[in-house]
Length: 452
Ligand SMILES: *Cc1c(COP(=O)(O)O)cnc(C)c1O
Image (cartoon, rainbow, N blue to C red; front, top):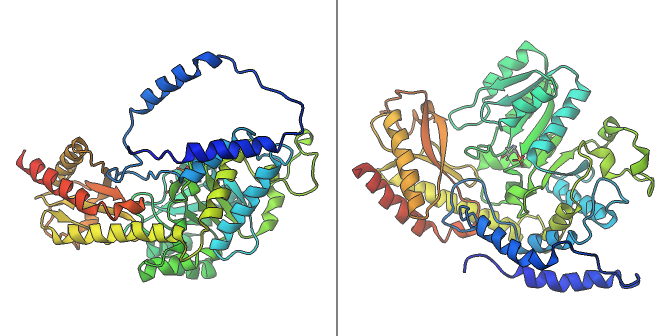
């Protein structure tokens, strides 16, 4: 047995309680079209879902995929019996209040006692909102982000018809401040995106230096911490990453994805603005949706209209159980992931079969197999990836500039500009205990790939 089966029982019990809240209503049972075939179709559905990589298992150590907490799963499902819409208070009274509470706790993680913010369908929508606000405040000015920032920043800038400039990344995949400074000297930059935890390698942009540049050039600063945001709570970061996370609250806006490291099912991103007054930018008139309150509805401060109240309910419940505070059980889970990444990385560094370009800043490890040239290493990475999957170990591949290896691997023949490397996102706390097993499989398939 691999899948947790704790949540369905808890859900049934909570469902009875929820039902009790409506006991005053006249007896009613909704008609269920197709009722007698539900089980048949559901088992067909389960069969289809079996065609997936085992994202929930520690031997899945590839892409950014983390199982939701059983409580989040149950709370999300429970909310669907009400199916609240957090667009406006009359669509989701309780779940809107829960959203505001949960989001305030996320803002508090960054030291904000007041803020404006809400949940969204994900990091992309949340970043869209941040850049839309930047464009409203400084129309026509450039959005700047590093070449290792999430690819959607460039696309979002296109959607918003704002110019976009790509800043170089350094050998650690962090935004290069000298390159940013050259761009700022040319003028016209309205907003700089700093990524705390790049999607590819988990690099943390040098926020202290970026903030110094902001003092001089006066741009708007957006922190994209969709992936890395929760590492604000981890007590075992290297000093440079720690310094960046500690200053995240100096940004004008922050994006963090509860559906990445926050134990939530998909459909849960979050945008936070430091200045609540930007709420004025969202003003619109839609008389039929607002008639139950004079408060600012969540629907009045969001670009999206209908949004799942269930996401807010799941996040609220998870944070009740595991508050997002330093030293708590939730923070310890992140620390375990980070320890796993550090341990994995040092093993790889000591192993003559592999090269590690830089130490992980969060819980993502990238490495390459030793080979004579970038093209040979790329082919070998692909082979290892395929053979590992056959042994149930699921890794990921990433294209990185070959030049980032120049320190760790001076003799590498860079016969092509980019190199296919292996990548592992160790975001499940259990990865720490499974490291021996993971390494054993990796070693065996690497030897097999070389022999082939
Ligand atoms: C995942 C990610 C995004 C995009 O978020 P989605 O939730 O996938 O829409 C943006 N930025 C960073 C840094 C990310 O890791």
